[in-house]
Each structure stands twice: as C-alpha cells, then as structure tokens.
Image (tube, rainbow, N blue to C red; front, top):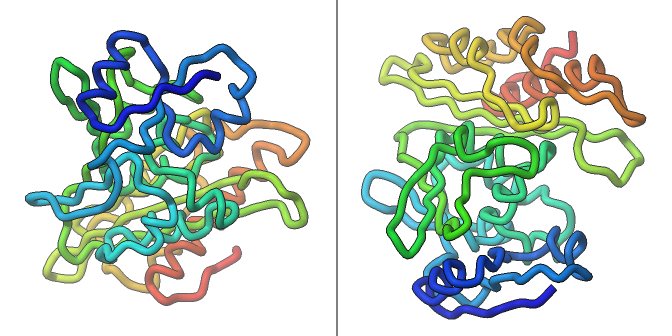
Length: 280
C-alpha cells in the first residue's frame, strides 16, 4: 500500500478527487487487510481540525480522527456515557490510542462498537468533498457490512450529535469467556427524560446480531413514556428482538446470540438506572 500524506483538509479533498486515494485514519484494520496490496491510501493523521470533541452550536462535534482514547478521556455530558464506555473497552491501549471513531464507523463491521452508540445518539455523519459538505444520519450512512454511503470524492470529517439536556446513555457488550474474539453482541441506548421524569425519547441499538447494527423500534416505543427508573430492564422481551438476524457460526448459534443481546440490554438498563439485572 502506498500512502499520500495531507496536512490540510483542502489538500486532502483535492488528493481524494484527483487520485481516488482511500482515506486512512488510525489504520488499525486497513494495514492488516491491505498492507501488501497496491491500494493508494490518503493519510489523514496530519490534517488539522479533524480531531477532538467540542460543543458546536446546539450540539456536539467529534472529529473523525478523534481516537478512542480521546473519547474515553473527553469531558462530555452523560448523554455520551455509552460512547465513552465503548471507547474505554476497545481492545488494548495501543489500539485505543491509534484507532479512530471515523475509521470505525467507515469500516462498518457488523461487530463494531461505534455503530450501536452512534445509532443510539441519533448521530449524523458529516462528509466533505471539494464540492461542499453534507450530512447523513448514521442509520442511512451504514449501507451494509463493510459498506457505507461515502462517495469516491468524499472524506468523513466529523460526527455531529444534537445536545439533549438530561439525557443519559449506556453501552454493554458480551463475549464468549476465554476466547480472544470480537464480542458476540454489543448494545447501546440513549434515554432523554421529560421534566416529569418520564422518558421522552428512547433510542436503543444492537450490534453483532445483523449484517449492520440495528435500532429496536418496538422497544423504543415500549420505553417511551415510562418512568426513568429501575424497572426499565423488565421491558426487554423477545418480541423486541424478533427482526434481528444473528449469524450462525462455530462460536454461537443465532438463538444464543439473540439471548445474549437480551441479557446485554437488561444489564445495560440496570446499570443506567442503578438496578439489579434480571437474568430470567
């Protein structure tokens, strides 16, 4: 793989348009897959302005080159607790220091930790090209496993999240004990209460149980209007996970993965509300 380095966003966009070079962020995955290939990579590590989290108008802006370590250590409100927990639990310290949120979402792996969190946050993906900028909801940006809505001349520049005062989020993932493998499932949720203390907005997403991370619309509807209390975990039921299509492989059956997702959701809601998870 040959790398072309850019130092400004304008330079990077020009290189992308002229050569079709593939953007490279932390390269924690692409070097493994493409190091020996003839791919031309566009190294974004030196581009100013693509890293860090900051308040931006009525929301938050997280640069695409923000590392997992940056996110874990960032001074963000409880609305981002789920994303920060996911960041803190990523692989090892070297991967957290090198891997980026933008790279993770663009890799679009079914078992990636970033996608469920961004779906739960109602995040938008900001893309830039020489022709201008656009935004795509995270739910529309991820088209399929390893496939995203990023055109040949575009670069993902940031993740945008609307601020929701009083909102909190959570994250949970489950592994098969003793195996150094990606998680079986990962789940994330954001709950935004009304002044009455009841849930005004609920967003719940599951990764690892379908080709792409998916929101659980029926569970979101069941949670909306409920008190933000220790009883939330009881609302997680099989009916809310029926549309998931977990893979069958040598690690686990589809039924096992679906059950793991249910348990992870209950544990997450219990942690978010200070309750005990019900294993039944």
